[in-house]
Image (cartoon, rainbow, N blue to C red):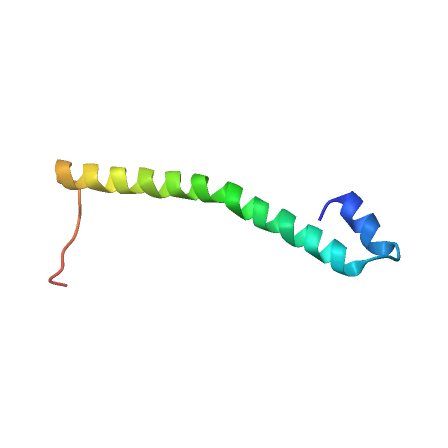
Length: 63
């Protein structure tokens, strides 16, 4: 929560509107993180497939 939101929460007023505003901000922040997480996942998948092609995988399923 930013300082302005914190100060706003201390003042008497419409708590329902404040909660709705904070919820909207939280959802917007979540949406911004989705493309970054998707890019990280794709980079990991690409690296994993490259390890398979190179034969760098060290797996021994007999243990």
